[in-house]
Amino acid sequence: MISHEEIFPSEVKLPSFNSNAIEFSIGNIPGLSEHFIYANDDMFFGRPLIINDFFNEDGIPIIPYRKRKWSNPNIEFKIITFHNNKDDFAGFQFKAVTTNTACACESFFRRKMVGEYMHTPVPLTLSLFRRANGSFRKEIKSTIFSRFRSYKNYEMQLLMLLYGINTKLIAPVEITPDIASFVVVKKEGDIYLIPLTIKDPKFFCINVDLDKIRGKIQEWLEHRFPLKSSFEKCDYTLNSTVNNKTNFPNIYW
Image (tube, rainbow, N blue to C red):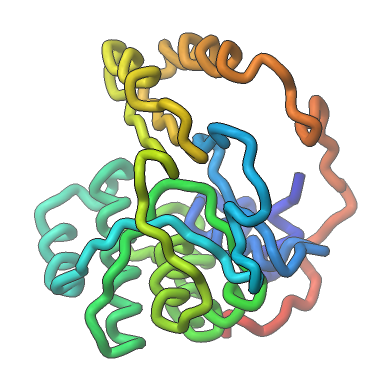
């Protein structure tokens, strides 16, 4: 377990309730390895994997993606933010944040962007993370100082994908059902989509909007994974002595 105080600059008001800000701060985790994997709490590993599922022989991150062409993200962002409730934290805000990120990358590289992040664990390197952060200091600083999620934020995973593609610092691979499956459970009947959609992929994601059916999904997960993995912990202890007065590397501003 890592405290916010260990990864955020001292000027930031904590705790942060902004997942976008937290994701851009993980590069400050003390002792973080050069090669690491970032995953959200709704992502799962569908079958046993090896290091080459995440990094190639040269140590380059292998990131699944969809070959989406961002035709005009600047105009798209204006349309999205004009026609939607800016306080909506669901679909609208995600679309706005990803489109905002594509806009920034298009301006930086001065070319059309191709590539959409899929909701899978993301292998990264500290070198890639810090280079991307150094190139987008203004955008990342504004996100980190945003205590709550905002449609004006930027998204870490998409930024790393587009930056990595355009600098050849990642090895993108087009998504297939064998690589990843994604299920959104919005109503009780959607739970039956889980066994139909998720066969034997490397990764899968179950996004749940209804608290009352989380128990059924947990039952399915426990049936699929009856044995606890060797790296799972039962108890977590936070370091209560940490503070956010540490001098962080100047990678944001």
